[in-house]
Length: 343
Ligand code: KG4
Ligand code: ZN
Image 1 (spheres, rainbow, N blue to C red):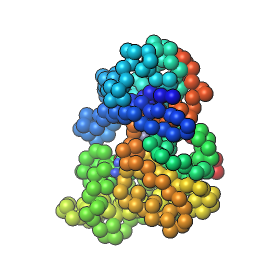
Image 2: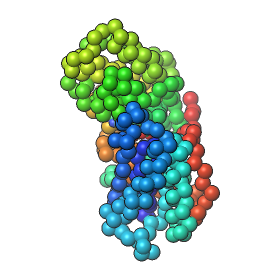
Image 3: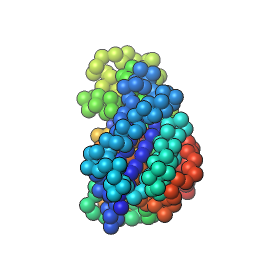
Image 4: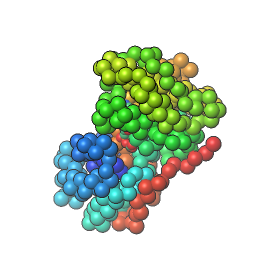
């Protein structure tokens, strides 16, 4: 079957066509129109502005997804078998644009539509274009701008959050620290790049909740520690900023990797996975691979291009939830839709 995925939960308008056959997901096209340049001047995403830009960008993005897949939606035979849209979590104004657009397409084309969870999408990014099976149960560290959680995947469609952040998400802490040091938005990729040239042992920063005995995280104290450090020490030179970026990043990566490994030792998964925008981070990718090998776990490296927000992962989540699809369903965007927490 062919699935059209639509994603507008934050500031990327995205559409993708994915073929799902015998348990494999093949990406036919994956188009992302990022609004980063627009929101950069405000230092973060402005929901109202994001929604207006989704309205402008989404239809052209969908058209491009069809064109890149070599399909013409004007022809009935070229239309997808299923439409899948992000219903939450995310910014309500942004979510509404994707949900309403997909409802209109479902009604007009008489194609079943399913609303899916954005975090399930991030996890399923690991399955895109993969030629082999992923052995389950898996343990997935999901790290994005709004979420940090360790999720147990017992089968596709069944997820248990073992622990999550009590305050800021990992990506959020990257963005806030970058803002604090005046590096721009979004902070993740900038700090990632700078950190490669810095000394991670230069500044002593805390490893929050490393020994809390559960699988929860906390990153707001780390951000405050960076703030105090910048008030106490002159961190102005390129070298000093790179050292700070590296020290901060090391602290985040240490906590994320260590806690994932502790969860792995408790739950003994067949596979360890990584997902979400922060999964693009070089140090985190390297750290997870190294630790998984050291502890003897199979680790699958999610392609970088599928880590940040995209609609191919949303199409995959649609395939998993296809039994719930209906033509022109009543679909309610849910900004607070979380995967179930189970401790
Ligand atoms: O998953 P995503 O695209 O959107 C959300 O669902 O939130 O994640 C965006 C987050 C941002 O906080 C961004 O700074 C972070 O992912 N990010 C990174 C990197 N690339 C994106 N963080 C660290 N290193 C990166 N290379
Ligand atoms: Zn996301």
